[in-house]
Length: 180
Ligand code: IMP
Ligand code: MG
Image (cartoon, rainbow, N blue to C red; front, side, top):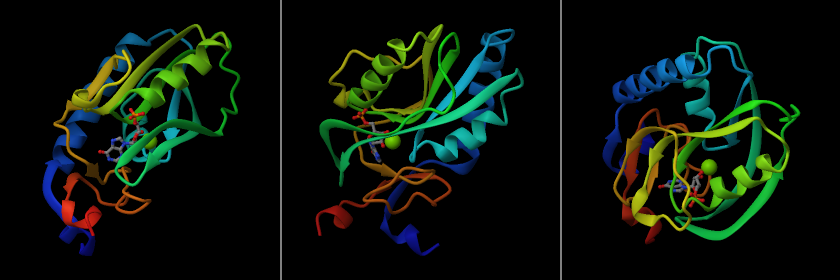
């Protein structure tokens, strides 16, 4: 793939991503058996992870999407912009937020707060990647795919200025791309 040339190193391969989805899906299926599970994916970065993990969930569930953004290039702006709300009423639901990456934690703290104000029965977080080095809020993910170092990564839904989302693995973006 031509996009590969901008990737310095593969961080999570396609095989490992598959294993992560199977492992987390199994655990989620066990934990949410008999509950009113609503998987909420955060657009757009988490769509690929959502599509893969939902296939590994074997208990009854609904899915829905929210959209927010806080990033410009490789830096968070610290201000979360709300762009799309849920279609399903979260009242009484056991919500599992499916997110691509937990970085500063600002986005997830904001989303959790919004959902708490709307009477969800429970709210938990499933993050594919966890970058603890940069945490600015005390948010913790209940399910984590992989803890990664403080590097800017793209692929498997994750972008740099809306590009690279279609790479099938997670890779470290070559700094030459954003230092241009
Ligand atoms: P937070 O609010 O800083 O935790 O950022 C969460 C959001 O920032 C994620 O949902 C991603 O969209 C984006 N983000 C954080 N780190 C990266 C990265 O390494 N690559 C691509 N997007 C990232
Ligand atoms: Mg995102």
